[in-house]
Amino acid sequence: MKISVILGHPQKGSFNHAMAERAVKTLQDNGHQVYFHDLYSEDFNPVIPYGEIPRGAVLDTVVEEHCREISSVDGIVIVHPNWWGQPPAILKGWVDRVIRPGVAYEFCEGDSGEGVPRGLLRAGTALVFNTSNTLAQREREVFGDPLETIWKNCILGLCGVNTFYRKMYGIVVTSTADEREGWLKEIEETVKSYFPG
Image (cartoon, helix red, strand yellow):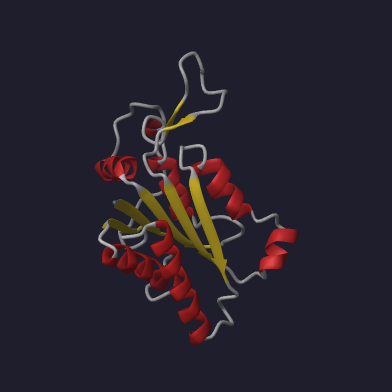
């Protein structure tokens, strides 16, 4: 299988990097072809120019390559921290520029954009791994777990990805090395179960 792994965290050596690296290694060990993008290292430009918005627009070559890739993969893994209940801006900009009409979704004939789009992504499965410094109970009860809604309902589900799993790891700021290793092992097992060799 071809799997795209997208990382959105600015600090080299962060736990998010360790999570993404463990996912990539597990996928490769299982014989999958992996496309790995560390958006900050690649200096991905998250700002979408107005002329790029319409379907069929001429795209920047980097964005065009990301679009080709995301439309061809069998699975997606996304890793990022929870910042204000949202992905970091670089990852939101990646969604704006890459998860686009004609690539990830389309509107049916006669629909001018007011209806529910039809998903075009080939990927049947997506995993999202997040880190947080908020207690899981507070995240659910006070904030309503916005990242679950964003990724599952607003983005991936609308684009045709039917199997979705997300896990938040935390509290990172007070976590021990043993806790982090346990989390990495859990990520490894999760990736193996959704993308077996």
